[in-house]
Image (cartoon, rainbow, N blue to C red; front, side, top):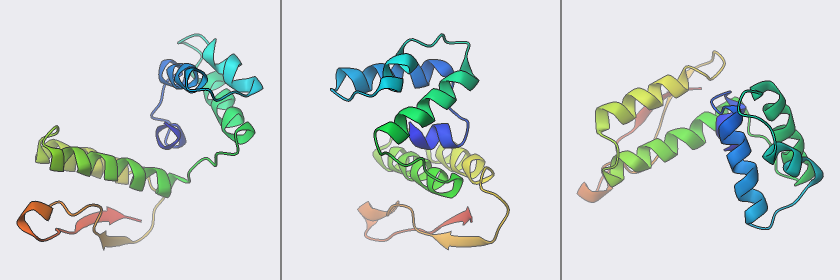
Amino acid sequence: MAAKAALDLAGAEELREAAVAALEDGLDSPTLGALAGVSNTETADARLLFERALAELSVPMPSPREAVMRLAREMATKVVDGTVRPYEGAKRIWELTLRIPRGIVTVRTLVPIGHRAGHARPLLVRM
């Protein structure tokens, strides 16, 4: 959830649900409880509370680049698992890369997409 929040892809409802799940899992911080009670329409407030709760729990907020890489890996894994079609996965990954501040384009292997065939295919990622 931190990766989605870092890229402003998480709304108040998702952040609230993440706080509720964290509390149910035994995590606790003063701000986590406040976030669990935020309304679904208060996205800006929820984001600030989420960032504060992460800090209280000593969990760093990922940089935009780290967040994109994390979410791209998750999407690539879904493609490999067959839960997302390759075209849709590639499209979503490309959309994520557009959230990285301008920089160079490099080739990186996110996951061994062709691991079943014994080889990995590189994927263009804007850095």
